[in-house]
Image 1 (cartoon, rainbow, N blue to C red):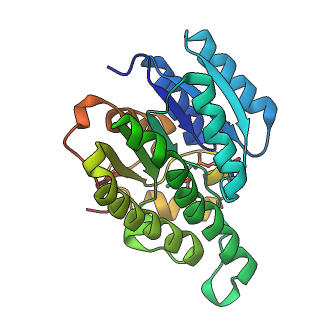
Image 2 (cartoon, helix red, strand yellow):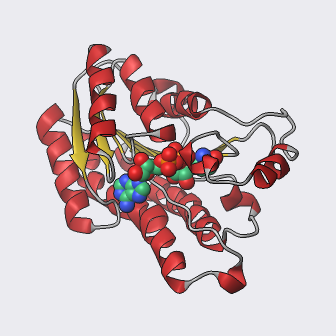
Length: 246
Ligand code: NAD
C-alpha cells in the first residue's frame, strides 16, 4: 500500500527513528534519513534501505534550525519527486528535578523536541497541500500525557507536540494531510540506556504488560499511520506503552 511513497524520518540514524525508516522501506517507501550526529550510522541505515530495494539519501540537519530544515525538505523532494510521509522523531532528554533544572537544559529540549516538530511540519506543509495528500506522524511520549518527575522540559515539549498534532490536523485536513502522533512508553534504545537500573525497574513495575517495548513496536504503528488503513484518522495520539496509561 505504501509502494513508491517518499518519506523523511528525522533522527533516523539510530533507535526508534532507525527502525521506523527500515519499517517504511520494508513496505516499499523511499526514505530520507536525517541525522545530526553520526554520518556513518546514518549511511548504514541508508545502505540497509537500499538493500531492501528502496532509494535512500542521508541528510544532516538540526531540526531546531529553520534554514537547515527547509534545505532538508528541499533535498528530499528533489531526490524523490514528492514527500508523502514526514516522521518527526528526533528528540533529546536533559533530565533533572525542576528545582535543579538549568534554563539551558529546559530550552535545549523545547528547541529540539517541540520547535523541531513545528519547523519540520511547517516546511513540508506547502508540498503536502499541493499534493492534496500527506501524512505527518509525530513521535510524542506517554509522559506528555501523564507527566513524569525529573522531566519537566521533556514532558512540556511532548505535551506540546500532542497539542501541535491536533492543531495541524485541523488546519490541514481540508487538503487531505493527516496528522497523528504516537506516544511510546518505555522503549529500550540508547536513550533509555542512559537511565539507572533503579529508574528502569521503577518504570517496568508500572507496565501492565510487564516488559519494555522495542523500537519495532513503535515502527509498526507508525507504518499503520502512514498507510491507507488509517485514512479516517487525524489528530490522534496512539499510546504504545504496554498499558501504562489508560
Ligand atoms: P535516540 O537518542 O536513540 O534517538 C534520537 C535521535 O534523534 C538520534 O539519532 C539523535 O541524533 C537525533 N537528534 C537529536 N537531536 C536532533 C536534532 N536537533 N536534529 C536532528 N536529529 C536530532 O532516542 P530514541 O529512544 O530512539 O527516541 C526517538 C524518539 O522517541 C524521541 O523523540 C523520543 O523522545 C521518543 N521517545 C522515546 C522513548 C523511549 O523509551 N526510548 C519513549 C517515548 C518517546
